[in-house]
Length: 346
Image 1 (cartoon, one colour):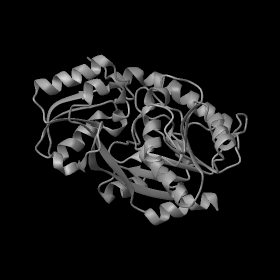
Image 2: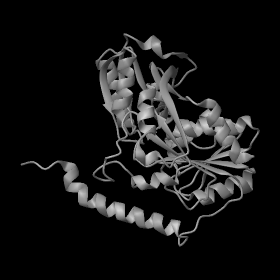
Image 3: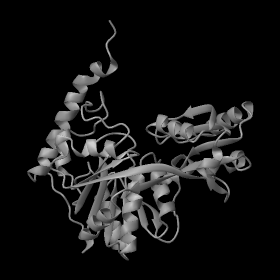
Image 4: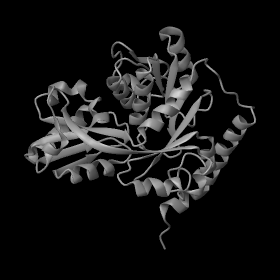
């Protein structure tokens, strides 16, 4: 009889869960200390591994503070980068680092928020202090910060994936939860992301494990446009319908990307998934180009997160119809969302 893989890993999940519980306990009783950096910190995070939409929600939160006239800094670990230590990705005036130096999502944030300071640092306290001391930031948005408890925060926002979160899934590595469900009690607010039907959000809101969370939001995540990676051409996403495409991505849930494309009515002649935060090599790029030519496809399509890593391959790609799919995250309860964030700075 074959044993399901997750059953083999279950003892490791129990051990991992004990370690996480102990770490949280040490923070709760004050043995492990948090650091107050002197300005409001808002953390955007989750309790599961993989893409819940942290990057677009981080961007949306930063925009609210910008509208209030604040000097905003985003601090991220910089997953997938080839460096360590503190990297200033943007000083709020210009982009200073690429995806290899700073990580794909961090560069994506900087591109979306040209007036925001963006820093990659695995030690988020150090990164926050640099943003304050060197760039006079007066509010910090912490990307993927729920587990990074060393940095004191005014608001903890936890995201749950409306397309795939299961309360019963085991801890890592047998499942995909990074923390026990009891950790949700630390959250001030939850956002159920990728919700296209409110019944999905309401079902999640009513789960008994979320009763202690005061603020509950939902957000849709929809394609808005396609953007030429090496040009200025931008078209509505619907223009892809019926076209033959080669698609590739290096994200946590490639099946979600494929599903979005299928709903747009494109004809996927080849789909090439890579690992999350994959650093593309010349051989990867040549494989993609070869597949495109062999299939006589109309275009090559990737995610916005992957597109920021391709600019070093201009010689191989700039003359091809290579596009990234732009997605738009929309918080349904906009007024309440802005009101909650505004309380942090007033």
